[in-house]
Image 1 (cartoon, rainbow, N blue to C red):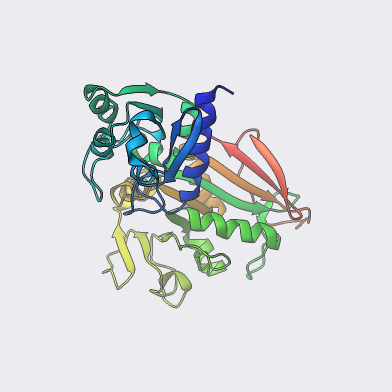
Image 2 (image 1 turned 90 degrees about the vertical axis):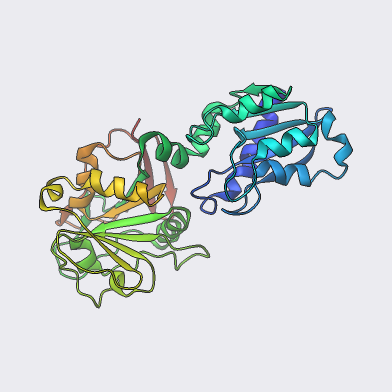
Length: 344
């Protein structure tokens, strides 16, 4: 590995620690290198807190040595004022003479301007080091800004004979405890989670991250006729919930109702995704049921699918969605096989 890639890889590992905490900001890591040695580093820990570049610069024990350092950063430094001052200003003031960037920031507020500001200040700027890896790290951020919708994760568990639920009235737990724990970890990492009416009624899900120490996602429900009983978990007002419906209903506390006109419900997914975009939701887990999952698959509106397959058989039930192609990767999680599909 080239030495510049080695330092960028270190910055990437730092950035990953912000997963689930930085949205709507991207995950960013940075390190300062002097004489082929990392002398300080930092990452964006949480939205509203210090960005990665200032974190690394402030971690430098002797600021007088900054002009002798190269700054490695996974994403183009911001040049606009948000919750924090522009990172480019601090980099210029610090005296750093060389900056290596992983990927450009396609957010319209930056979009190449950060690198331009640094160059105009006489700083040498190298771009595109481990660019693919840096873009993959911030797949949610880039999808949001470039496609004007959240990054969409489909998730379901199915039996060995291809069913995601049985025919009985009671909900059926298919995946094992290890898969359930991983699923709650995923929930804590994403901004929103969505189910349809049938799943909400039959399973009465909480759609939170109660099995792990992490934040709960925004709960999103598609309920055209407002058929889900008000006593169900999704409407209990404990966590924020957004309900898309064709009916008129005033929002109450943490439960927000958003009306879609009847024609929209023939193909509601694009309208739901744009509404989430306007709310700055950069990632969405779709957990079902089959009808809802198939809506996203048929529209081609998904980026990643995570499918658990348990060795037990049901015999009959609700068929799992199809049409994802060949898994990009597979591994065992307890007794379940986890297949990951990418829509690329």
